[in-house]
Image 1 (cartoon, rainbow, N blue to C red):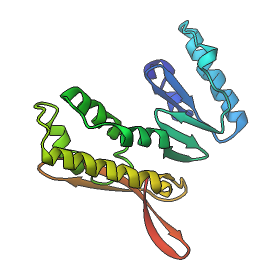
Image 2: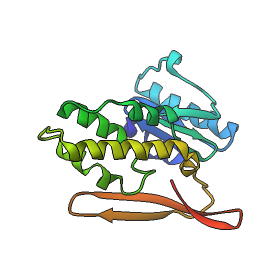
Image 3: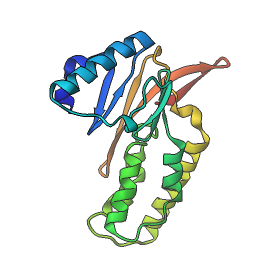
Image 4: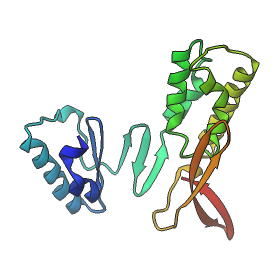
Length: 191
């Protein structure tokens, strides 16, 4: 689908995931023009859209578990809560599903790769023991903190971004951070 939309429209503010298309612009006028170009592109290859599935000109939208609005990207609290409420896995497939839900959170939580080590090991050979149960609970505790601390999910597009990486023999991970000043105190926020 990205090939169909084309690099020119992707660079202009279009994002595609499978058959979902997200268009974002700074002004209403830019949005209307870009929307027209996307619709023309789809029509040129005879692709139809279901209007009942479309939302146009939204100031805030949920897309792939993210809340997007005014230059901010946040995790949907519902997505975090669903992971918090998930029961302990009973087989490898359930472990894979739980870890899949964590993937989107890794950009908001540093060192999540280390926290998932014992869970990842269960994918190939499911054997729920104390270490795995402890790791599962630690992940849920981390999710609770993420849910409470919503300020970590805001990005200021005018500030520079910092990429921090982490690797061990067990796992790798990366975190995107911004330094901001709040009430005269510098703090680092996860993006």
